[in-house]
Image 1 (cartoon, one colour):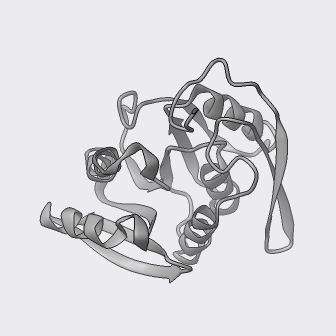
Image 2: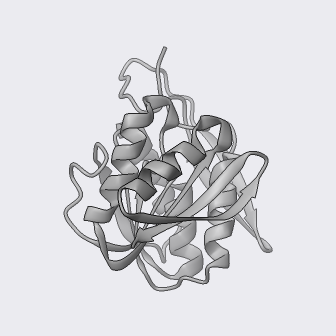
Length: 198
């Protein structure tokens, strides 16, 4: 069975289009087999994005880790006039993100293949992620804890995890590592977190 965090070169492509309405505007995204939430935009990602927009963060340097087909990063770039880099271990996801970037001519940023932060060289004001829960808790913690090596001094980490996927136990581990974590929204079992170094 193929997973969205793997590169399965034998998986047949079947491009589809997904739509997302924000305020009065519609945004379109190409999706495909072998990527996360291929048939619809994931509820957790939508809740994370809409909660992020309520923070009124504009003109930031943002990194989207595990970007999939680019929904979070492209929306943030469009709505908040931010520079956004997007990374994913899945080459097909990165290809789709590049296809989607071309739809939005004012987008500032880039996407590239990276296993977590392995190819990330810069620091950012914001890191945002809907982490790949199915790859395991250790990898999720690597992404969340590793964010603070790539954030500016007052940088912020935003992420989403469902309660039944260990949201609160992961929050406790981050706090034990000197990170202040706040729940800033919750709905349908999804928790939206904002984290920063104490």
